Length: 161
Image 1: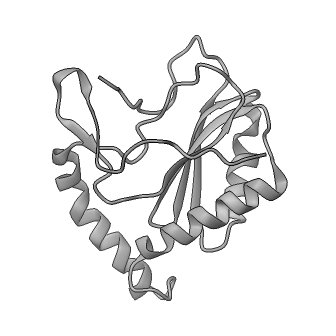
Image 2 (image 1 turned 120 degrees about the vertical axis):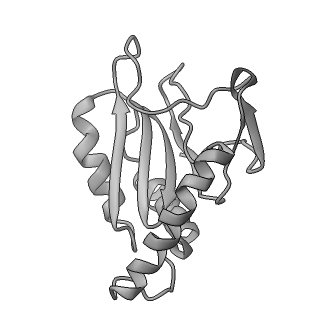
């Protein structure tokens, strides 16, 4: 199964209904991994406003170095693992092709994998998280998924103009 990559520019993404522009300010990996369920809403992923960037900057600096200072990371910043984790996740997904009846996007931030989207069965949450945790250097995995498209998704949406 081919891996789908989101064709979203890492620069300016959208202006939510005349609101502030959204960007992937920290260049966090964000990609679509499956596309079997139509009309699944696209998550906002790492796309945030400038104000949100300002709020997150200190936390990210602190979290990034805390990992190294605590001896949990060999690299001086947890976010330095993200590109490698994203590539390893894509490879593992391509090898196993799990959760075929799903439409999912992945965001990697500071050794944490966030998986958002639609699944056939909500009971897959733990299995999706276990799959992500098996990827080298992943510290935590969180799946925000749902199966009833008539309800609101459990994640923030990417609002395009």
